[in-house]
Length: 366
Image (cartoon, rainbow, N blue to C red):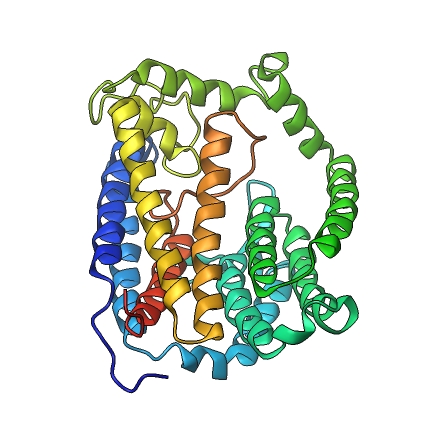
């Protein structure tokens, strides 16, 4: 490890604050009507998101100044604690049910989502394991199987809630990390075939997931039921055109698109800011991905490189799934758009993860 730290990646900081600022604006714009009707306060969701954004920024700057090797030291305790939370949330009376999923644990006036914490904990733990066992990763029994075992245990606990979106993001992130460490492609092909069978089994075992698939293929079969969200999302994106209807001028947020400040906030953004606004957001995410890849390539050690790969993969996969759902490219699954969607746990964890990425950048010559 270099003894002297450099300045963090300022371009990455600018991109993060740009995304966060746009996200706060859109949370207010998308939620004002719903918040005023439900809570008699049009700023209700905005104020809560601003609070978590502030906490997240403090966490980001605090973590940015903590040597990322510290997380390697505490990796086992961190992931054990997150497993404890995943088990606790499944206990009736401890975990709170929202939208059919027992994914939340109430803490005072707020709630936390343990699966969000597990995503980052798994990245920290897996980066340590893979950096210590890189030479074994080509062996299925001695390298790949042990790493995947703990990943699938966390995946199973999250699916018991159930939360397919978060579980998919975590699994996809871990697969990217294992792949770049040097695992054999033949192993991935075999596991991919088994995973496909398992995925089909998950769909068949839960009728609501099967309905989501059929709604994705033809949402007009059930326009007031399972196809409702995607239809309303497309109704928002279509009229946006090139320049949009104007900030705050969305029509779909008037009780057509359910809870537009959460998973479908990009649809409202596209409606109000148009193709230009949507493209700007995608460009900012592309810049974030670029800086993250450069940090991973120039990290001073394998652990730092894998940690950066995991963080940037988590963000990228989540962005692709969310926008894919909103634009009708993949079936509906509940996953937030990083730095935009309303949600304290997701926003705070994302900013904390970026704090780790910024700390790694302080040891890189880029």
